[in-house]
Length: 131
Image (cartoon, rainbow, N blue to C red; front, top):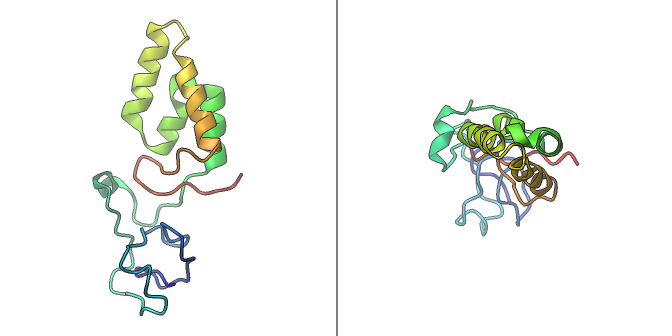
């Protein structure tokens, strides 16, 4: 099957194009030899938060985000990296108010990122699988 946005070949069970990151629509899943749409070269994300993302931004690293969550999760460094600024600030406040016990939240998120339970960044782009 081909991506409607950039025309690259993608697998039939893919949810996002590995080249441009655009979501694979349900209507495209049956059309294996559909002509690519070169009209719009930038990804068209469904998430409203993507209006702030750079059109050709590189995907964030799953390994780096997970390690940041494991090591510095209490201060939300991994969420700052992924673009979840509000969640990161809340993690800092929770860790301060609970005298560090709230840091478990960030540690658990780091594990979830590495175990592929958290798959997108704050802008809805899929994380790059490098681990």
